[in-house]
Length: 312
Image (cartoon, rainbow, N blue to C red; front, top):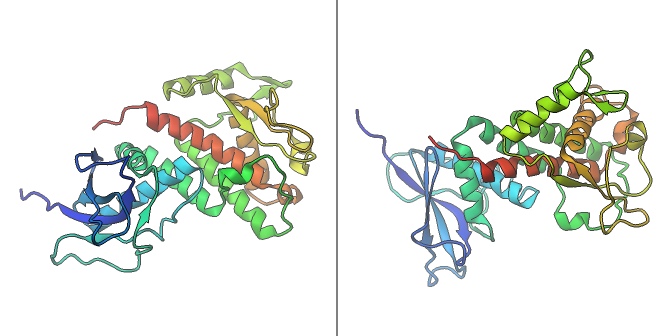
């Protein structure tokens, strides 16, 4: 059987000089990434250009999409969209057809590119992780906030229903990441998550087992952003939080939340507010609601990618 031809493509990404080298190699399931020192005579950018080695252009595009999604995961927000990526430029001349419609910016350089490629390589060995990563990217494309935008202050609720729709469907996607990781709440009318305000041991023990199997620290505490007076949503159901954050004061009510309560509240927000036929409470969805679910999904996915081994 004839071996598949390996082609190479410039990915339109340049890694910082202190993060890459000519010797760095990152191998995924169906690709290899190398780094080529930028010729400073031809370019004003210093660093190492990302070169993707794989079978064809479509595979190279899949790799670039995974890298873009991994950058979003590291940043907590979308840097690229999946249909507006840097240029993929073939390094060989052959008869392969390369469409132009997927081309985006010519070159992008910023910190963290090798780390993002390592995450993408790990994800490539498992379809569930790949789907989780791409869902996270799409959620960020719908709505994500720069982490600095969440600096302790209060942004008032938008009066534009389109903004609330984007937030709602971003929440649905971020919770779907949690489902893809098999870390969702598994409850029903016959097996409720809580009984008389206390966790149903059957439901909590099941979730705990899946968290532990995914090497997630069940004692992790996350920050839950709560700003200004309680919204209609918060009056319908309050998140069960712990100690207030060190920066909490006046309208800033940010607090710690344990991972079980965070997943449970995310499940409720997705099912009762963001999904299905929307009720009036949906206009109370804020940038803080979507940020909370975003960072929960991000925390779980980053931990799994960082700690688990992804081998053939």
